[in-house]
Length: 181
Ligand code: ZN
Image (tube, rainbow, N blue to C red; front, side, top):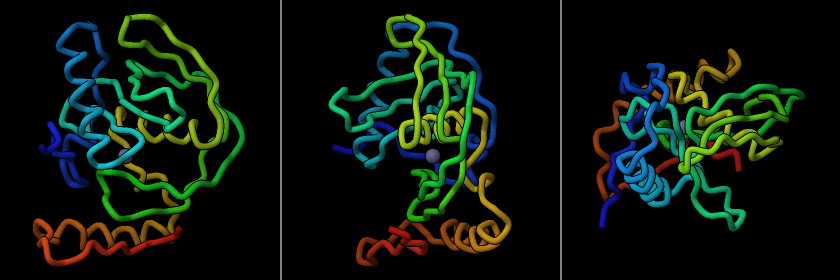
């Protein structure tokens, strides 16, 4: 069985637009969340933001591999951030490419869960990184915009190659241009 959604790839305008707030938490949203989780696991990835599935709404799904399973955060807001932390980041919408990116180390996030309850928590390092990355997607920001000048130069070339690559022929093994780990 294939995933419910084809993940949108860099160059798709849906990835550069600001998504709008979720105003209704209903069965339709619950179904969307299920389908997005399935798409995320199929990829596989640890997070997937609605715009990556072509849905212009402010929520993302994630599974931190901590035994809590797949979850969703709706209308998330980072209310505080501090520190700096470098991590090798990739994105399902920029497949096969990774960069060392510095972002705040600790964040405070608020949002709404699928039951409509307000949630509020602290996250640091890896978890904070996942949230910041996914939240960027809701603002139409890709990790490419978080690169430094040198990285950006290399990224331009790599992304162009990525976009020119026709639907990958089955016989050709996927090649990672930046295999940092
Ligand atoms: Zn991403």
